[in-house]
Image 1 (cartoon, rainbow, N blue to C red):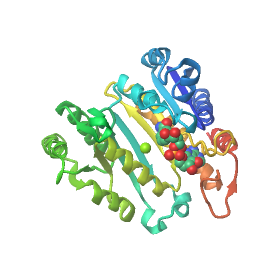
Image 2: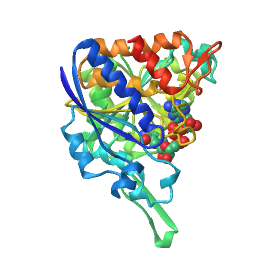
Image 3: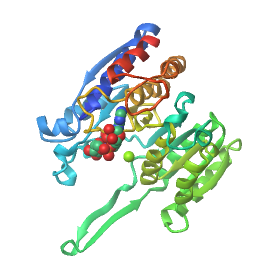
Length: 354
Ligand code: NAI
Ligand code: MG
């Protein structure tokens, strides 16, 4: 198959992990005789520095023509002084919105080799395998008005949804649950928020189309607790933008490091943007310490969700598990009797394993 992939390395460790992702894609192309072509574009802080905007037109145009997009990370202290609309994060929010990538899939799986890397008890973490389906282009992060008023003495953010926006994310979650363990937990704050009550109604309506999936509603505070006390109780979680943002960072402790978590942001036609969940990690940028596994696992998601390359995706995941089984790891992870290596060496090991 022929596929064109746009790379958006971004800032901090973004370029380092993007390099690892690209090498993995090249290895997959070679082994399975695909043709992947690549094109790099700027986004975030580096785009602000060179083009004066976090989301240049050229970047948007390139992404619109791509079969899939890979993004490293954006942001850093260098740009923290900029006003909200000019910040690197606007580039990321903007590309998700412009491409209508409304469904953010964040799988969280506890690798057997990393059970002791989590601060949680290994017996709690063992067997955790869940998928957070986060709504990505609406809700609290996009609602208007979002502003300060009355000489700065009042402030407002808005949690707004159109019915169809909730319907499409709920459908995506049911479809994901159907091909997994067939259990869906819809997370909201229906005891307080009107938007959550509508969310619940829609889940209740849609569940009739998926009779094989069991459905449960959970308040977000209770879900936050259960994620770290009984994570194996979850299969698929579907939730609003901000709730999903927070819960997925929380869920990262199950895996031992933020550097292990991949994500996919997709829309109905299969076009998607793939990125590690972590940020630009300015504290370790440029030191070849960044864990490349979140990026490499994001490549597996690209192969599966945008290219329907199931076998290739599985082999990438297996290569990661095999290298962990040999106890190779970067410094963000602790593995007993492990072999600590740099980010580029770890990436090379996984590529060679494939
Ligand atoms: P972060 O995810 O960049 O870092 C949090 C901690 O995890 C740091 O100690 C970092 O060293 C470590 N870490 C993250 N990824 C790692 C990896 N692959 N390997 C090893 N260690 C890793 O979050 P933080 O510090 O809150 O934000 C830093 C910058 O990144 C900010 O400017 C923030 O706005 C931005 N950010 C960007 C995101 C994106 O592009 N999707 C997401 C989150 C934050
Ligand atoms: Mg986050």
